[in-house]
Image (tube, rainbow, N blue to C red):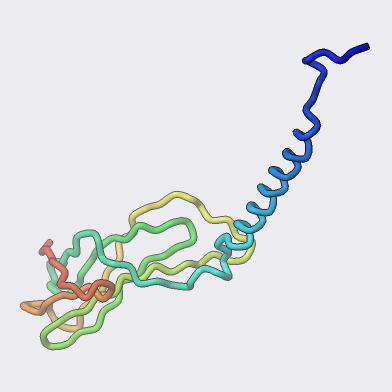
Length: 137
């Protein structure tokens, strides 16, 4: 009996399919090896201050917000001189091996307490080196 067009399968289709699937597996393995793991993530990184910096009524506390994910925490630190205040906004990863972190992002308020009132000192963003506008509360 002669095969019909429906029963015929091109002989070269199977080897091509095997090659394509093998290529996908190799590619996926390569990506899995490079995926971020808790051990490969930097413990903390300095971020530019992109949200408003607000000076509290006491004249000594500067507050801003940073977007953080599940196992992340934000911190605002500073260095003071008579003429400037340099602020560093740091994002730290606290993920432990095997720990699953929430994928949601939230805004976390972070503050830095100055040793002396801000007065006329210039506030500088350490990440960019640029002056940072500060509004009063």
